[in-house]
Length: 415
Image 1 (cartoon, rainbow, N blue to C red):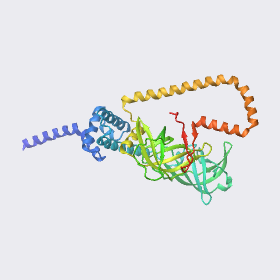
Image 2: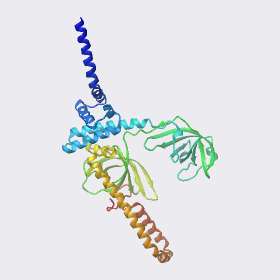
Image 3: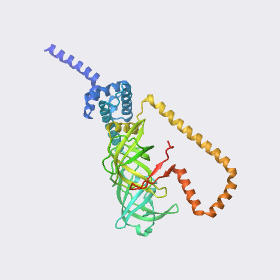
Image 4: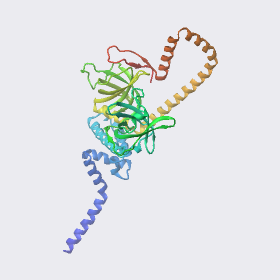
């Protein structure tokens, strides 16, 4: 009996020590299985934990910096073994990116808008005035009340202050890096705020989140090409060899992009968007869901929703969006960025020198210009307007008669 007891005690001591030694690994594997990774994938993640010397292995599943380090190590290893484009590597990266997106979106949920008191000055809003239409306004101050500029419709002030007082309205807004919100409120009174006519709205804690992003967007400034799918028979994944319509991509995610181009676009048409990231071609096929047209600049900002994309190209975008650059490439990237900034600074200095040199001739040129303007003022005004347009935006108009809208191609010499 005593011998059995001693054996039991010894067994328990050994078991406790074994569990204590392996408990971090056991907990890591259990968490990995719960999050949807295979045992072989968890084995690789565990080896990366050891390689990166994480004090808390489970932080890999909760920490964005830890996940980024892990993905970076996987990319380095895949490039060394030339297995970056293998189905196994791409599938694993896809899982990691999906999990990373989930973690980042979950973190952003904690920062979602819970009260109008958290709104910021300068926030653009849209107001529904029942039976009267939709109006545009801006928040100019947040305090005891929400103070907004006088609402306008189609750039016109349709109603005076008295028409708004005591009215129940619905306010819509899109919060940067978050989502859209709507709330109902009352117009309490009209005031003068810093010499500007304004309305005071009641605060509320009842807000409805009307849009939930399923992907992470990043602001960018890269050139791409557009290919309009007029027949619906376009190969949705192939890389086009012919030049398309040039555009500027202002933000990018795995699910879509904000595209700026010349001319007046219309929503609802399908297109292929093609661009280059890290010397790799990326093709996205989808539809234009909405358009913001700037009449003064004759440019459209198109909200592009991606419907079809190759999984390898999706991972290229995600690597770019999350700025996951292996350490051996980061120095090169930073050097290029600094060189670009240096070049811009040098160009600015040269421009200042040119301005100083040209200033001595301004008086003579002004007399000549005045005479030419008086002879043909309309022609001179159009030339001046076109020159300002090209200098400010660096684009030149090119009409395409076979498209639904006039398009503008960016100059080929722009990089």
